[in-house]
Length: 70
Image 1: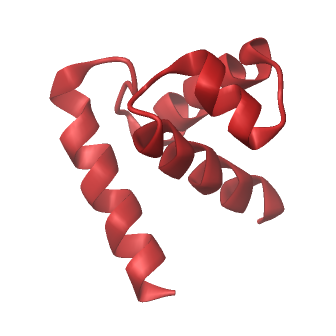
Image 2: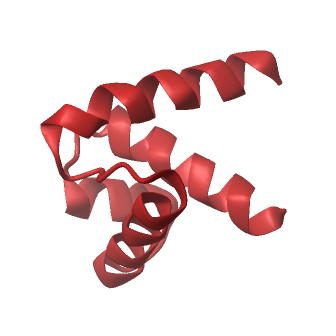
């Protein structure tokens, strides 16, 4: 469960920093390679690629629904 919270936090930061890898990684306090790994994991779990524009809206809306629900 902790891992999913971590991935959700990563995704929210990804949007907050407009996909800027270095700034996002610094805000999360992780290395860029760790960020890349987390984004790949998000892609595996959701079937949406956080690097593809077509999938970004689905990911964004999903993250918004989850964070507003909590």
